[in-house]
Length: 226
Image (cartoon, rainbow, N blue to C red; front, side, top):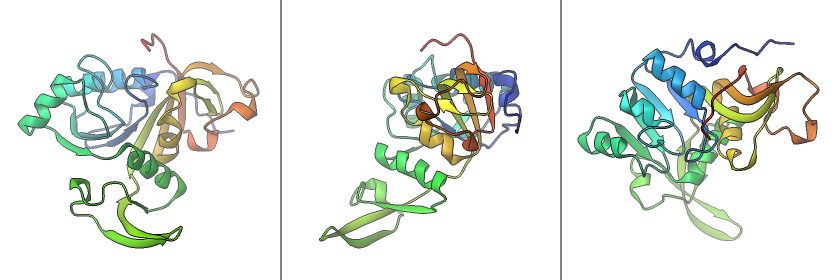
């Protein structure tokens, strides 16, 4: 069996460099990969493109990477409650792409399924559609316009789970099971940090949300605030 276990967050992110595109799980401050974010801050890498539901707050989550100006572009569906994000966006220091939340989730799924594009009615006729192809389809007897959205192409997906085993199988708990499962499918390399790491056979197969085939590295994190 492939050994996916690494010692800590520093080892897990050791080959993440400048100009990398990252998918980061979580919703608000729930289910975010806290240990890996801290390790990336310490690593000091720059010009990151971060794809996440939100940009954290000023002193937590991705807000820590914004404070150190390590993020070049933020692709999100919700960006409130972060004064530094607002300052960088309005000053032109930070490139921002806002997309509908369902579109963000489905672009992750498309990447995981190997589909290059999806078509969605969300965003048609708005600024979201600028520069994108719009096609007309008839579905369930209704003809309307759909916007073409491309699957994400991310170098790494970094997710947080409640429990995992040494083979890489993951279980998420409650609302932390948000963007994590679909992002785990979508990265070229997927890193999982877990609150509890157990041996193979100790997880109920019927409760596994992300199977090991998607996970490349796994470690047990520590000192979680959330």
